[in-house]
Length: 477
Ligand code: BG6
Image 1 (spheres, rainbow, N blue to C red):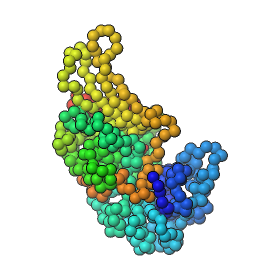
Image 2: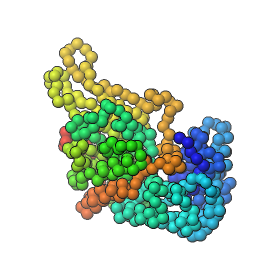
Image 3: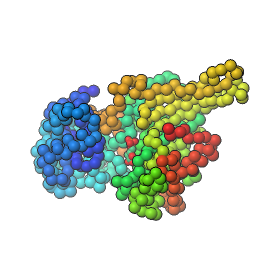
Image 4: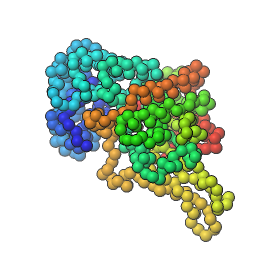
């Protein structure tokens, strides 16, 4: 889509998120022609340096995180020429007049709060005080958006005091993933699935987000968060919403977000015995969770599995099983929709019973698979087997069509002014309202997460959670 001239101010412009995600993403969009001159990225941070030094810093970051063919630095240098830097103190007066002087008329202004939530209030007030925002300027904020309902409400109130909801872009980078958007395309672009998309035909749904990384390097944040706050409250809930929501009338911000909100509000409280928490121990030469965070009594979970239910007409009776963890066997995120068996087998018990399964792989090998039942080849009567109708996006769309990074999509949506893939205030609050009692529950019971060996599938309890119901997790591989 067409992008106009913009100024993107990144507070925390020298931080890790800027280095790893925001700058590389913008560079790729620049290469795709979506940063028309004289658009700028203005880095703002406390570090004392000038624009030249900032460009040198960004040059290194881009070379680290983007594959640039050797010797092909022309695009990078052209990109760097559209970057500026201002030394700025969110809490003091340093830099604000300079920033104000840099603002140009007639362009989209976006202010990316790539800083801890502790600075949101200072930044919001300063932007206001220095008259930096216009009616359609955008504010971009990242998770963690609070650590419970109360803190999320506080953050929302701070932002609402200075900006309209239509200006606020709360990022959940899972919504920027190409396959996650494909979920909606598959559901609402095909006649094939939607008529069967309910508890009458679907036995259960599994959502797995498994990572091999540990928490080293982010220990302070993670130890206070855990898998529930870090992954379930946001990314897994968003996936659940897209899988379970009613068809919105239009693919428009409020139409989509209204439907997602209804899903979150329909979630039942989760019973304690439907929650499994785990913590990784050392294996294969990697440290344990407790070593990683330097707390040998830590009760924070690095793995979490749970079973939940939605109380509404479409889903009453269909369990949703969610699991996510660090230091798992493989990096793999996928959603599996397990359909019920055909109501009656005409082939008799010897043929075996099979059911359809739709698997949507988010990473690493993005694609969609539909298991279909066919006859086992051979002469001996009629025996059934499953074969996958397999579609890897790389194969179907060609190798060159590799999915853009989530941040590329999301940053450009900010510039375009499209909030569809961003979370609304009420959505975030509803998600916390659901997770808070679960967290408070295990805290008050003094639950300690179960240890699990690094590079496995998590604690035994996770397998039990499904086995009790006569079900199995679909493999990680
Ligand atoms: C982040 C979490 O939001 O998502 C991290 O804070 C996690 O703990 C990351 O590793 C996973 O993102 P992705 O895109 O690698 O699946």
